[in-house]
Length: 83
Image (tube, rainbow, N blue to C red; front, side, top):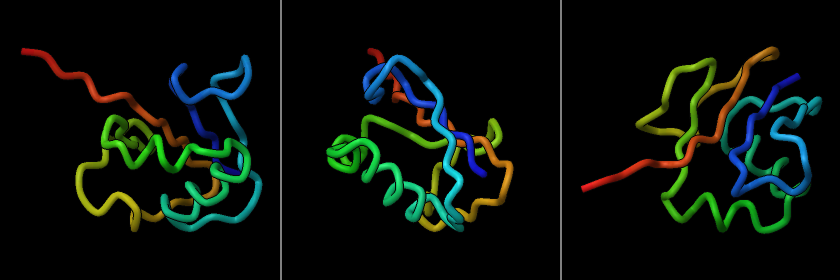
């Protein structure tokens, strides 16, 4: 089971947390599952406005291939920029 925390911009309901019980081994597979639950999510994620963190570790490289394990907590984090 993977727990996914969503920012308000990506939520499809009142909860900020989704539980994925399907077996997923990578962020890419997780996005496939999430796209089924929240149609259009993949397009929003491809906009480079969001990053992924797994167990409080921000992923910066090769995100799609990052492996996941049962019990992981994945957070989709909005990118913050300023000037």
